[in-house]
Length: 413
Ligand SMILES: Cc1ncc(COP(=O)(O)O)c(C=O)c1O
Image (cartoon, rainbow, N blue to C red; front, side, top):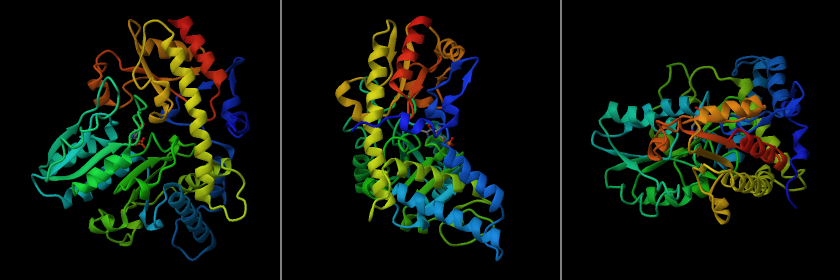
């Protein structure tokens, strides 16, 4: 049975907002999704009734600690972590990555090599370039095929050497929407004796992450891309985290995971992540006897992925029918399993900014530019021409919204 978006839309008050009678169409999701009432309530509850620093003896401190502990458990289920000690919270993927790169860099020797991907968001590139500069490491680049928008089968092998210590690669591209075979990549990275750092910011809203199955060493994602608040989670393999020196202030705990959590955390946001994960789990059906949250999550993502694939196919087909448009990503209807419903395009003679602003006038929200996907935009030769128009669907979007967006585009172009 196909997922029906109308069953969830009422949980998102923002989806029914209209401005001067014109309904809003949210297709800016790769930059941040809308939030269901349950998430906002959990955050409000934390702020209104459990607002204290954690670690004290008194009631609010204890209950704030419980909210954080519960959210950590939820994240462990969401990512299939072996232990909550592997779950580290932080303000953003960028902040977590910059922070951890300091600990990883200290562990490496001058002349060691790291591999960075040309398909990645700058948050999985710039922190590592800075680390390479500071620790005198060699950077090798993993290119992607600009015709297929995927990594060629042998691309990784040709950049791995016996000095490779770390490979940083994304789960899904925030520009082309390509969904990478991270499990296959991580097997080769591991075989080469290197660590893998997976940026799952754009894949986690669409595909259920399983760090054990992927076989990565680090994985990071951001809850504001999957219906939660502005807060991120870094998963690190327990034995790998143990080898790193945490950069921390002296009185902060020495134990995992707290030693990697810098300063006082946003407890309300952490509580909100737990609620976002529970939102997904509920989509997988009421927890029947014996169903774990992980099983509920798996049920939810299976339905959502199929539904999102249908939106992506509809959108891509419609875009391809508009003269002058080139979709900058996988378009083959038989390969929609290898992409997320983030669809970027360029036009032969219209600037992406002009198109995005014309859509905004019709209350259709999309992004234009490179969206921090600096390397992909350069590789595709569109960096200097204004990047792309990016239309990103999630499961609360409808076929009618896609059609309305295509009709608006036809008018604009
Ligand atoms: C693929 C990808 N990685 C990393 C980031 C950065 O995430 P954050 O905003 O949590 O730092 C983004 C943000 O858009 C992204 O799309």
